[in-house]
Amino acid sequence: MKNTWNIYMLTLISFFVGTSQFGIVGMLDKIADSVDVSIPTAGQLVTAFALANAIGTPIMMIAIAKMNQRKQLLLALIIIIIGIISTITLPGFGLLMAARVVMGVGTGMFIVTAYNIASKLAAPGKRGGAMSNISMGFSSSLVFGVPLGRVIAASYDWKTIFWIIGIFCSLALFAVARTIPNMEGEGGIPLGKRLTLLKNPLLAVTLSVTLLVFIGFSIIDTYITPYLSAVIPPKIEISFILFAMGIASVIGSKTGGLFADRIGAFRTLMGSMFIQVLAMALLSFGSGSTIVTIILLMLWEIACWTFGAVQNFNLVSIAPESSGIVLSLNSSFVQLGFALGAGIGGMAVGGFSIMAITYISAAFVLCAAAIFIVRYHLSNN
Image (tube, rainbow, N blue to C red; front, side):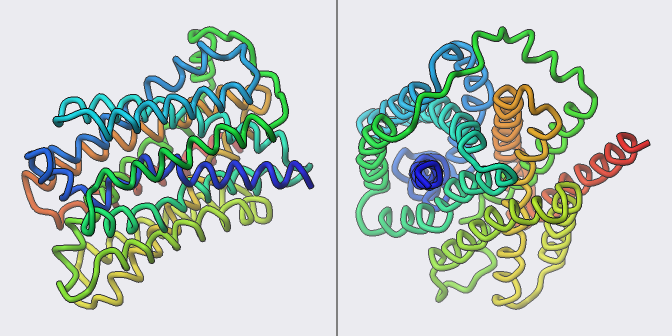
């Protein structure tokens, strides 16, 4: 029972950590105005965070590999808090980018370690569900963090949400120190040895699927606020739609692990990619109905976060003896997808129109699905 409560505590902390990443999405236009840059330029804050996460996480995980995993969580929270303080206090767009880099590294460290600890704390046969809880906490920031950030930014100042995150992350330091048991890390495994895992064709191809899917996700997610402003009548409050999409992300995160435990990872992942492509394809043609648009976005959100939760479980099952390394690599590919998606989305918005992001997103996920099917058949022959 104690282990179950610890998993839920990590889930709650993951919510606040996730808000530090996703919170700016709902107020990107406000941030752009406050630092006097365009929305596509402000979107590169997502790129900076994600690249720092993708590159910095494996490096930091190697550096702290000999620490027990409770200390790893504490260090990650301290780094996040430093990034939050920098965000609040430092002026200008350049220093804001630097603060996002710091938070990106801390967030990656926390999520990778939380996934690993949750899988170890879980009862036999419940690892998929335990890991999906962490994903659910992370994605819950889309339910409350993104719309709440937009409401606060409209009523007060966009930095206020980071004050709130900082306070709760500080409280989380004490909670982790008192409740998470000592768990040994995986030792000082050098980067070269970690990267040798990519020589496993099954693992390398699966990680490429992660990359493509999250490029598709980030293309939409980074510019969701200006997209909604373009397709939704002004009388409808965008924060309510962001809230509905956030609820959908939690549903996807939670049900993903349950489906993986029951029907298998392959079927669950294929189903999630099919729904993503279908939803974006239908949006590309334009529904003409606000209700249909919102429903399609919610289905897309459910499918995206189903994929995120189950892909972690899928990768751990491929290389269970190196679970921490595999999760770290997957986190890097996820964040690289966020970075590339934000950049590609910015080019689409600047070079074409905001409406282009739906079919570009669908194209990337369709490629991912095709690769995943080929990988599955090759591995079973």
